[in-house]
Image (cartoon, rainbow, N blue to C red; front, side, top):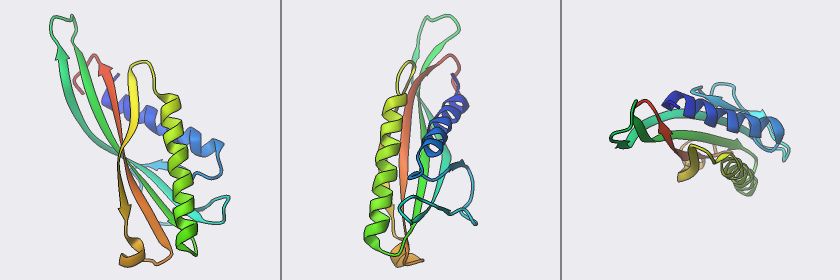
Length: 149
């Protein structure tokens, strides 16, 4: 399994979640925010985008024919919500984040282990649109690969 295959699998998990649940926005991949907001069940609007991150080699198994590498792949998930009140924005973000976490837990197994490893709260309410809030969520996948990329 290569780094790009791991990122594609992660994007598939997030896309499947968004397709199955109207409380989660469509998760795009490496896109921009232009005209990207979509309506959620709760009346808020949201934008979701997964950004491919860096790859790190943890270890290399010595003496294994063909090589075997333990790798760590990072990705960022940008979640932006637009709603009339701070309470509505925080509630929508909380629902989306909980559902993303549950989807990652359900998809972990075999050669890949996904988890949320960081959360950065974005300050749009003070730096931009007062009706917009967001998170940048760091997702990490540890996996075994036969190639060092």
